[in-house]
Image (cartoon, rainbow, N blue to C red):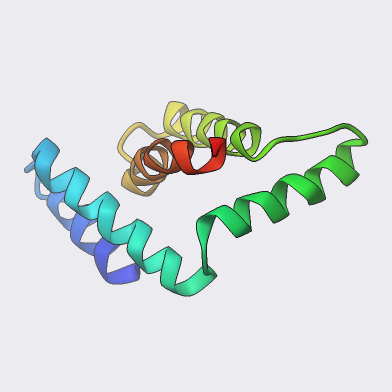
Length: 102
């Protein structure tokens, strides 16, 4: 993960914006790495929804967790639109949203 983010930051710092294809490839790599590190996304997001339901004292669905995480990353991008980690996370969560809806 750190290697991927350094590559992204280096490309951005050199003033050479990545192509959309490069960004999507990087996002796919991040999804794969996080899957290896944290396990099955469906199980993980369901566990988070259950914990948030307890914390918030109301039912939270896995898809609501994903949408909240996207909102969090959008808020961070508002502060720093060049922060590629947040951009990759938004792309990743968006790609995984259908799995949370199932």
